Length: 465
Image 1 (tube, one colour):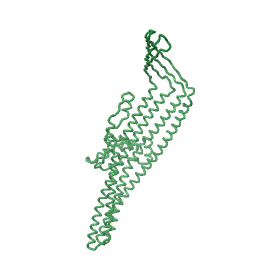
Image 2 (cartoon, helix red, strand yellow):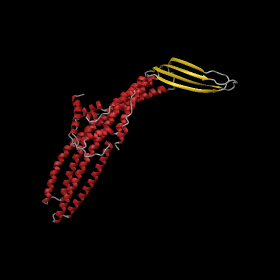
Image 3 (tube, helix red, strand yellow):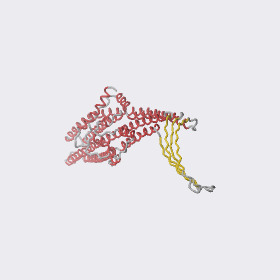
Image 4 (cartoon, helix red, strand yellow):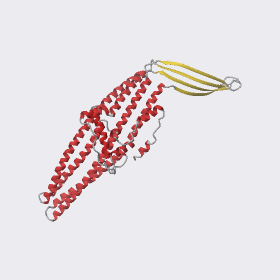
């Protein structure tokens, strides 16, 4: 990995974590938001359960290497018919049998490797879900902050226009302006109040989206932290995505699993060899006039069996063709995933550049609009400008301020979207103060046969509602 990319990865986590520490203690920080999301989001719990389910695939595949032991019990009765001195008999059989596969054409080995690839694919899918969930929370956090600022700007706009309306009425009383000026100010105030209502509605919707993403209502959110270190060029970003994106890893492991499944299908053409053994006892009793005694019969057997398939109705050939088609599908899917990720990286990088350019332009626009507004106000007091001129200048300033708020939100979201696009929007990379879910714990427990379910999962999910 190029030196810049290694430094970017390290600095990104450090920068984000340090920025969280600088947030006001009394406000809800982005770190707290992400921690709450990580600990309780049902999509993450579902993905973790899917990983645990895939862990069982290896344990199940390994059964092909281990002996199979069965105990059986049979009981039956026979009635007499056509015999003068025989009324009937009954018997009971208890047997213990065992079998061990010695060779099955490589089916078990291929099954284990396919299951192992499935585990790696499910873990990569979990990492991808983690990125999606965290980005959703970051976007919701940024939207609430943006819409909160929009409400504040709208409230200030209403106050400014109310003052302009009062000034217009005062000037109308002394004959400096006409009724038209007053009507224009009244119309603009009505529009400002309508915009305020719309802004509050947008904020409410953003708060609802925040609750859906995080699991709680936003309360006094802290300002956005500084941005993490990001790739300096599109080429660097594409290389990071190729090396780190979990969707690429998941698709790659799916190809590997499909290749091993083809080996399993092809093993059906070869012979199988196994050893079997059994031990049992049969107790028979013939009551009645024949005076047949109770008879106990013991038997023990062991044998070696081999099977060579000659014809199975075409099922083996069909399974092999299906497995080959699955490989082609997985390979095509891998190429498609790479195509989509490259496009997402490019789009995210472009969106970030556009947002940064918009921020610079909006700041310049605000400076010019503020100067123009103040100048028009002074000229209006001297009679050189109309009330409408003042209202238009104030509206231009409001638009410029709103554009800056939107651009700053877009830059922040685009930065973390780019981080997600290259595969680095992960808990450990962000340095969040939270216990990271470790899939190895369940995997090792499954292999040792001591796995147990997490009874606290449903409680954590219920806590979101």
